Image 1 (tube, one colour):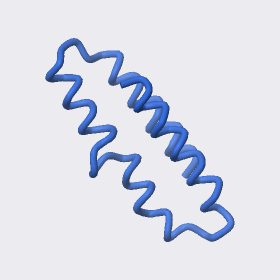
Image 2 (tube, one colour):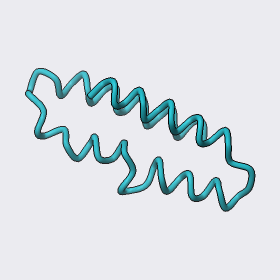
Image 3 (cartoon, one colour):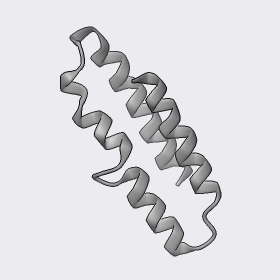
Image 4 (tube, one colour):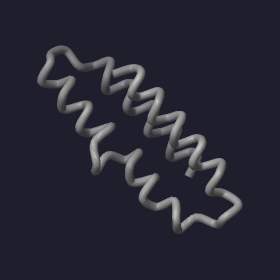
Length: 72
């Protein structure tokens, strides 16, 4: 799960660097920070993780989300 979060962050930041206009920026926001974005899927699936992993995955997911929001 942590590898998946790293991948989401890397992909999101790379995609953001490739945006060139306001429309593309809005599409990026929807794709990476919207309700059906990969990061939100991680949050939705946290309940299925073993109890011992939830804290670490939750912290990492919050860091990735914050990094994407800051970059936006």
